[in-house]
Image: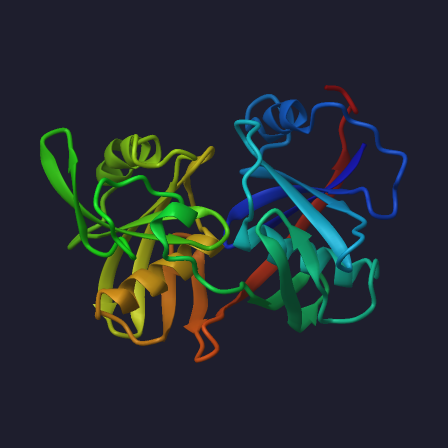
Length: 283
């Protein structure tokens, strides 16, 4: 089975073209993802992405984390998919619609040079209602903003947002690796998150620049998270520490995020194709 390796700011993916190659038959994509994403015994990646035909959009994107679970969406992956589709002329137009488990999203190629693409994605509207994120709290809240959550005897203030997938944003004075690896997995699986959650740790540089590190649900620490960057800006705006547009500085590079007057979120950043190859079609 042929694949293409691509990344968005170091958040890397194995892309499988089931759009033009329709005879691919895999019974267990989650199992394939665990094998292919293994960095010692496989290709190595944060996720496996399947590009398929869609009845409601130009194409469909499915993503499986390195642990085999299937999340609703991935912002860096959808930029990689848009770059791949444009570069390989699966669809000739620069602006396309993509069906995901989080709904139909709209990426657009802004710049393209060989295997390097700069992509702007209309990510939809942020979801703030706790039951829809989902977050299970005893209080009757309309939003979870700066909420004091007890974790191992300590109070952690969290702000929760869904970008089609759940996010828990924590503002800190200094981000450390120890903080990410110790608190990240605890918050990911905290009982208030029935579907688990992605965890973003955010330093406020100023109202238009945020530093962010992420513990991704099902993948652990990664170099970037597109939906997490969107959630970080929304959380910062809700906590009155940022404007509606900011640069999010991630370990793998920068993303430009805007919360427009239409209530839609726009994410702009790079997508790079790295190499192609093949691996056994086994599950």
